[in-house]
Image (cartoon, rainbow, N blue to C red; front, top):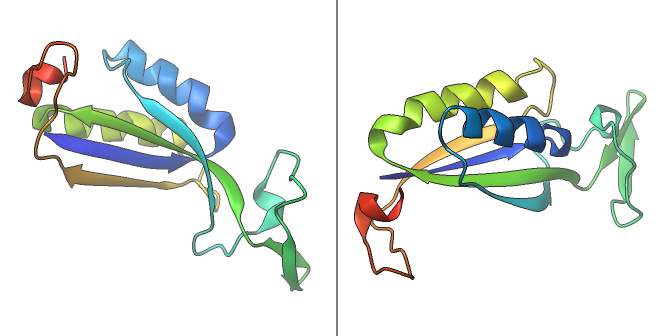
Length: 126
């Protein structure tokens, strides 16, 4: 089993959710997060209004930098054989070839437990 975590643009969550559901994976968790990557929080990449908590930290070569950029973290637990199709789908939906497209992390998952039925392992994922 694997856990796939993807950090994506907020405006891409619905399209990502819809695409994953279309290929048979409707169960995801999505949470708002803030952070920045190698782009150092370039404010110009945003197509959303920046809340006042996101303070502009500086300017270099005419670009304004923010301490943090709002993103969404989606997670999905899957069987090993499903990882490639899910990662491919997330990339297809979120790739714009622009700075800030996001990152995908794939990690091993030791176990999953369905609380209602006590099912464990892969049977708890379905």
